[in-house]
Image (cartoon, rainbow, N blue to C red; front, side, top):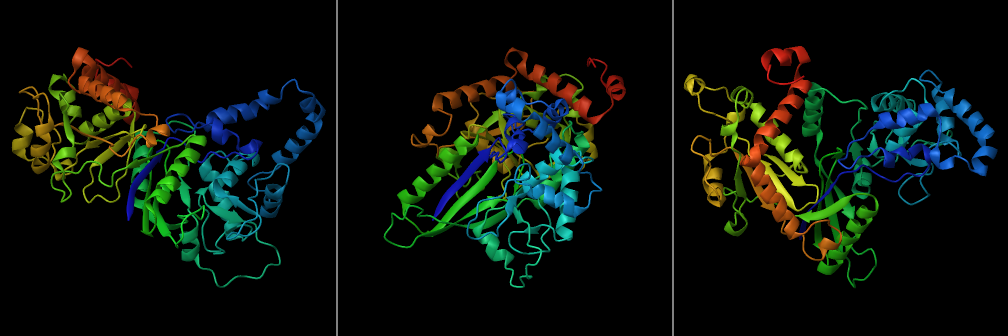
Length: 485
């Protein structure tokens, strides 16, 4: 059995357990971006508006100040033992997980440890600094992965670690693989406070692309014990969560009852909503491209042409090579689409899912993206942009309702597909309906066809953003004097 794929998006792990983790909820923006700078500003002020003008705050002010003074004594050169003791402090330390089977006592979640170190250790200015300090604690055996593997490095995210007992005997029967089959572990990449340059964003993109993979974990299908037979299943999930991108879970089973699995996943969706997340089912192949053996003419992707022929210079220079792909991605983001990394696809097309989960978008990639143009291609003065493979586009162009203008490369555009798996039962948990999806599609077509000059306006907005992110202002002014700096 194969339930399909679920996509979750928009926000990081949102379970604040104490005041020092409260900004995990407050600093997560609707688009999934973190803004720790806001939190750092509030820490400088040293105030808490929710506690102002209350008797409790006035009475406990001196003790709080004393505690804060003690905590502020922690620095990056403080002995590791003292930092660990402060982390264990029941009043202002990190939150210890309740005692439960499968994990040791005094366990905690790694992302909360990272946040605590940033808040309480002077000299730690970023997630990278906090992770380095915590890795040092791992190497000196002050903290350890919940599997008992002392060689396991510190990973920021939903990873469980614990404080080993001082006189505890070493466990030589560590089975990390068995632990990973029982516990879902997701890494959260360090989030920088300030806007990053294009080079740093590209480095993060490469890092995710090289490290992201699926990991298997066992799933208790029949949590409520309703079935009269043993039921067994597993899930595959992304090992990395990046704010602003989709997070994918695939549920599979060997022996299970259909309605029990449906209720289980719907229960996950309701819990996700309570934490500011959205979980929706998606097809195993959202686009079903014509070359696929599963191709279905009734749900073939719709081609939406991008009328780039109406754009004036410097479009002809910028939209060659990777420039067109960046502009198309900018258009996709304007309409609320976020990256969906399809690890099962053998072709590296850029795919996106709408934040509602109801629509998919693809920017097809081909080998022409990386090959250098030949002399005849360089001599061609027409807009020779990145094109889709002929065998893909010949079929997809049949779904194009309006033929593109004769001066426009008709193979430049997007592939659009709807999520047919959001049924009436799921619409209670998903903020979407068919009328909304059709409206987004019509609006998307209007921009791509330059109705009311919207495509030209979008290109100029992207050009300003691109120039600001890739070159210095003076360089941009020399190359493109028509842009106001």
